[in-house]
Image (cartoon, rainbow, N blue to C red):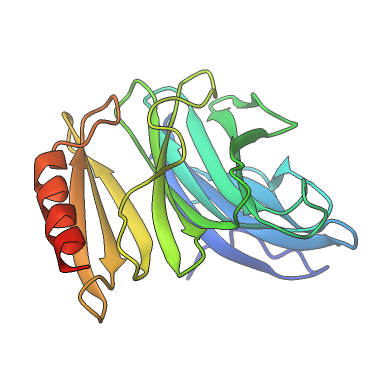
Length: 231
């Protein structure tokens, strides 16, 4: 049999993510149960790894705003989770920003019931992804640029403040970059993404130190120099 994480009958649930930490699985998703004007909010449920039994019924509310909260993603720094999502509350249904909240799962405690504004640069941002070095988080997300989507990165400290880098555009190619993913190997972060710099989508990557600096910066500068020389 499968495990029912949330079967709230009022409306539907979508975009789940799951991560292990604090001795439990934490599942987060976007949930439409609260209707207008909330539309969809962010909920969570803890799942016992030994029994597979959800601990929080049909879920605990992580964050509710008017308008829409989409596509939550999780990171874990060894003591607390960070959940991030894209949200158009501050623009009354217009531009999407990246918001987040920190929480612990054993016992459950929500550190940021009002949410954290993690990326608010004035352009629509989508689909955050997170990884942690154990001393903070690195966040990647898509941001709308005049010509196409771009991948941006931001650091988030353990206290929930923006760190370094801060809303930094990863690449300068005129073509799209999208769908970032992140991992941490115990020493450095590694990020991959879809990149159309060659005319069709390929997969590229970049390594980052825990402080957010690019390890492969010299290689990236060399590539940008070649692109500028062609113009």
